[in-house]
Amino acid sequence: MGIGDKAEAGFDKVAGKAKETTGKLTDNERLEAEGKADQLKGSAKEGIERVKDSFKKD
Image (cartoon, rainbow, N blue to C red; front, top):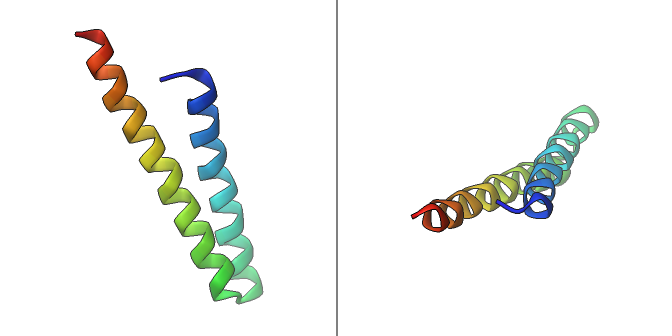
């Protein structure tokens, strides 16, 4: 996993958690949903990079 890709995936997860928390605190369902989606996007990016890395090792 490239360091830039890893950082981007981590940022998506952290930013998503912040959005989700803000949405919960302000009772904003749309912002909460966006936060959850951003977290999923970050997790998906991490998964894709892990698969790429597994092929590079062989």
